[in-house]
Image 1 (cartoon, rainbow, N blue to C red):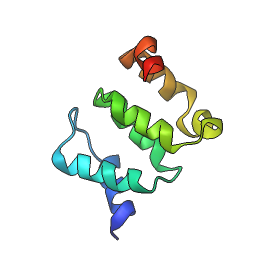
Image 2 (tube, one colour):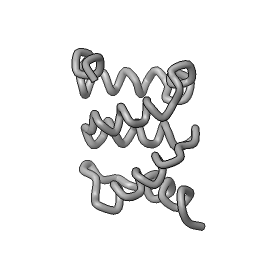
Image 3 (cartoon, helix red, strand yellow):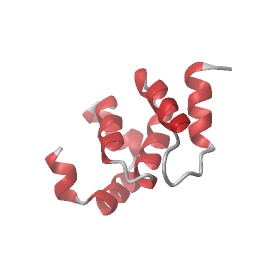
Length: 91
């Protein structure tokens, strides 16, 4: 197994509070052609890593109509708590 599957699996088992270079490479691989199952994993990592840019990249990868369904209200609430609503609105 390689490519996106391997990258996503690596991210799913990551417990880091700050991303390693390998984590960042895996994020880039997954975001190059995102698929629905990857988006909740990436949003969880964005919150854990306090990475607002990753959060926005994930939401941009999902269509506005499906973002809530794919990401989920709980993850959106967590992002608002971590990043603050004004910071999320401004970018």
